[in-house]
Structure formats: structure tokens, C-alpha cells
Image 1 (tube, one colour):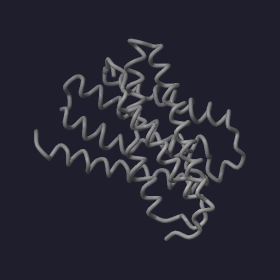
Image 2: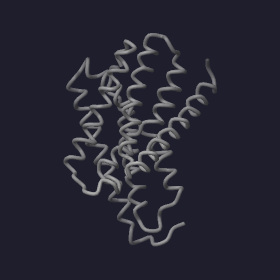
Image 3: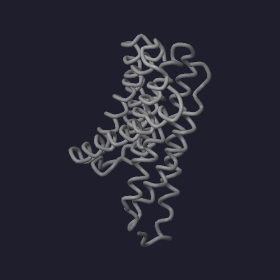
Image 4: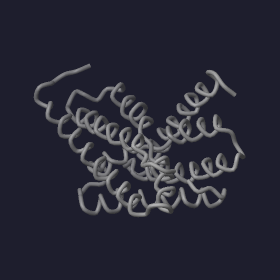
Length: 130
Length: 101
């Protein structure tokens, strides 16, 4: 597959991923008053899923174009670094007290470790190496 | 995975700074437009990525563990620094702007 189609597929799936992330974080905000749980959910699940995609493409089970559309598009859109960083520094209304050290350790470092573990599981399931 | 993934780092740190700025502005009275929410969630959220960072770290961990730790901690440190600077810069304009559409 070549030409514009793979690019369009990546863009379309990127939009789908972004909308999914918006739904999950808004749902989390409605339920808990904070988007925190939503950001945890999309990021950790997205890292797991990207581990699977990378493992599949390494073994030639899916093509490069499909991997780009799913990995960079869908999962790139579904996961976020910027919201995560801002949320660590400035927890939204529900987290009434700001506890900077705890926030950085639990929600900063903690989410990264959880994401790395999730990606490792995704890679392990599909026999990939990242 | 070879060389360090500078692209992901660049995208993530600049995106965190830009989102910090937008959020800083959002807290300003009168600046809470749907456009800002669109920019924040849509563009900057999608521009940056967590999944690629996580998978890249797994890839580097096996070959060069110290580089992976440095990359992980460095991403968080630079991301928080950029987001903090953005928040400060966005919030500083509080008094300059009273009403914006």
C-alpha cells in the first residue's frame, strides 16, 4: 500500500483515538470530579496496546502502514504526555490539596512505571522486543 | 531501537509547555472558550504521546538500562519544567486581559 491512503488512515484513526481519550477523561471528570483516573486509563491501556502493535509488526503479522495507523494514529491520539504533565503540576478541582512531592512520585513517576510495565506485557504477549 | 528517541522527547516537552500555557490562560477569568478546550484536548493532547515513550523505554531497558532510566526521568523532569513554565507564562497575563470572546 502506498500513496495517500495510509496517511489518511493514520489521520482518521488519530481522530478516533483523540475522541476516545476525550470521552474517557470526560467520563472520569463526571464520575470523580477529576480527569486523573481517565488519563491513567488511556495512557496505561494505550501503552499496552502499542506494545502489542509493535510486537505484531516486528514479526510481520501486520504491515508497516497498519502499524503506523494504529500506533502513531490511534494510540498516539489516545495517549497523552502534555495533559499528564499539567495534571501532575496542577491537579484539578477534585484533588483539593496539592501535595507536590506525592503528586510527582505517584502520578508522575508512578504512571510512567505503570506504562512501561504495560508496554512490556504487550510486547511479551506478542514476542516483540520494542 | 538504537539511538535515543529524540523526536518523542521534543514533541512531548514542547507539547507540555504549550498545554501549560493554554491551561494557565483557561484559569484566567473570561477566557474559558470551547476553542481553548479544543486546542488543549484535541491538538496538544494528540500531538504528544505516552504510549510511544513507554514502548521506547522498554526497548532501551534491555540494551542500555542506564540510558532508559535517564530518558524516563529526563522526560518527566523536562516535561514538568516545560509545563510549569507554560502555566506561569499563561497565568501571568491574568491582569492584562479582562474579557476575551
